[in-house]
Image (cartoon, rainbow, N blue to C red; front, side):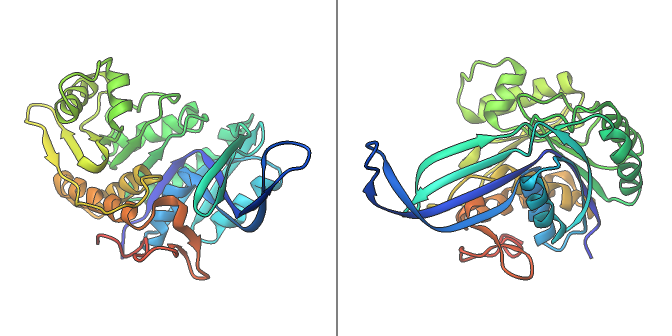
Length: 320
């Protein structure tokens, strides 16, 4: 059985609205979407958490949820798959709605802030501390809304680092730096270059290694893995050469959510005792399988769990 993983971060509600366009509006020259299907799924750190749960990993998800209709909807979606620990959020649930016709995007609308409210830490910190004591690893999936910046949450994460529990930190440009000493941070190439103050010169692999090495010092991480999309990832550690892990070739697919799939799989493998090099290889393979299966847009509830139900390969079976 897989070791438990605690996921900490900002939960969003992703909604796909699909339909047909066969006419324009009489009062404006805009298409009319006749809606045929609406699919809702957890987004942000919520997606990372349910993807882990889809693999049979026991997951405790610590987040902030607003007391509104969208928050209630998101709570139901999360409760299906994992243990939810939530504190209050202010500014409304973050909802990202994608409007599509014939699988082509028409528009995306965003609303809500989803920021931790007063007494958030009072509600979640004791439960978070208890969950971390039983965890094999912790994944911080930061979407810049404030959960990873909360002082009480960060104190628990810092204690986990001191006790030797693997902490994987997936950062966000609007979020805080990782707590010092995390086992591995997982920025993508653009995030790493920006945080390291790099210009992007020298090509993706060279830049990823250079930025990763700089972030080792700036963030005081034990390791940094810079993901480079279809090229894979570059692992940087102190006093050793960078390791490039190539990704399997994928035909088509959708990269949306690949970072969540990568970071979650990395945390799960470290929780089960894998060496970092092997865990990075497994995470790259898992993310490639997720992209090839259609990405986040194919994740849906199939009656028994969250799966890429409109894909040829289920989330829980891809790239084992």
